[in-house]
Structure formats: structure tokens, C-alpha cells
Amino acid sequence: GAGVSQSPSNKVTEKGKDVELRCDPISGHTALYWYRQSLGQGLEFLIYFQGNSAPDKSGLPSDRFSAERTGGSVSTLTIQRTQQEDSAVYLCASSTPGQGLETQYFGPGTRLLVL
Amino acid sequence: GEDVEQSLFLSVREGDSSVINCTYTDSSSTYLYWYKQEPGAGLQLLTYIFSNMDMKQDQRLTVLLNKKDKHLSLRIADTQTGDSAIYFCAESIGENSGYALNFGKGTSLLVTP
Image 1 (cartoon, each protein chain N blue to C red):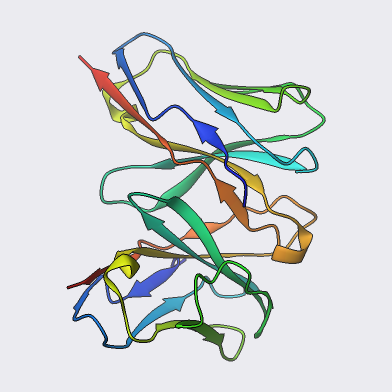
Image 2: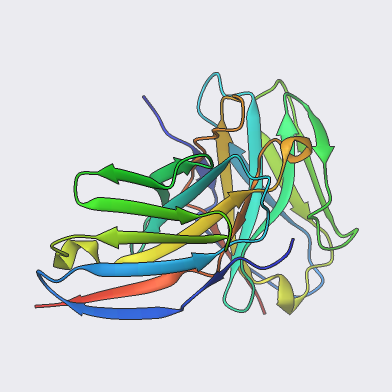
């Protein structure tokens, strides 16, 4: 079956512009995660969705970052007024919640470059 | 979250064993994970270990867990050039985060012929 897909693959934007990143999880996976991978910080957890609700937004780095999920499926991560330090690869993962053993399936990522 | 520590780089010759070490932070993490990231590819779960185990073997992979020292290691036997990748150690952040993962910065493994 299809894996996690993300779009766009690459995004170049100018500082101050807004960007929207999309994630299509594996069908039937109720849990969805966003992570950010950057050179200086490694892999950071951003936000977790269970269905359409986000119980944990603690990883979002600032109020310029927001995310939503609709229909328990597709999620979008929005970054407003982008800054150069937002340049990173944004990874999405999905899973079926268990009792602690979470096999998270990752998408290929969106590489964001803010000029 | 707090830092999961890994050495950043390891180079081995083809056929030798590779050992990648990790120190994690959360003693309540039920599972600990090793993920692999190949150039231009996404993250893939390589193996995991349940926290009440001290060793798990899976073909060429051996995971050792020392809970007292919060130390995790991944041994790859008979390392091949195709094993060249970045290896990430990860722990679960916790149930409130849906068991989202707290990753180390990754160890780049280079296997030379």
C-alpha cells in the first residue's frame, strides 16, 4: 500500500512569506506527527495529532507555527512570516496507536529553504 | 526534550563489526528505537527493544540495553557498504505526546571497502 506522502518535496521562499506543507498519512493511521530535521538541532518533535485533535503542541517553536488535520487524514503545517532559521526538512510520520510500541512510518519530507 | 546523546561519526571497514552507542534520558520509556536514514531517503525503523530486556538480536543486528546507565548500543555484524547511513537512537517522549519520539542527533556510519 501507499506510504506517507508529503508535498511539496522542496520549497524555496522569501523571508516573511507564509508557507503551507502537506502530509498524507497511511490510510487508517489515526496518529500523525510532525518533526523538523535541521543541521544544528537534529530531529525535533513539533506536534502530534490523534484523529483531528492535537493533544500536544509543545514542540512548536513559536506562534508562527500552526498545524491542523481534517477528516482524520491529511494534515497541513503552516509557517507564517518565515525566517531563515525555519530552513529545515519537515518530516511527517503516522502510526496506529498501541501501548507504547509505536512504529512510526515516515514520509520523505519537505525541504524548506528560506532566503 | 532533553538530549539523547550519540557520537556523530563512525567509520569501519567492510566485513568488520560496527558499534553505535547512545545515552538516553527517560528511564520510563517503554521502548527504545534505532532508526536508519539513507541518503535521500526517509527514516526507517531498523529495530527496537523493550525496556525490560537487556539484549535483542535480529539477524546481523544486536541491541544491548543497560537501564542502570541509560545506555543503548547497536551492533551491526559483518558491516556492508550498503549499511552506510545515518543511525538515530530514539526514546518515547510519553503517552501525552502519543509516544512521539525524542531522537539523538544521529551517527553517520561510513563503511569503506
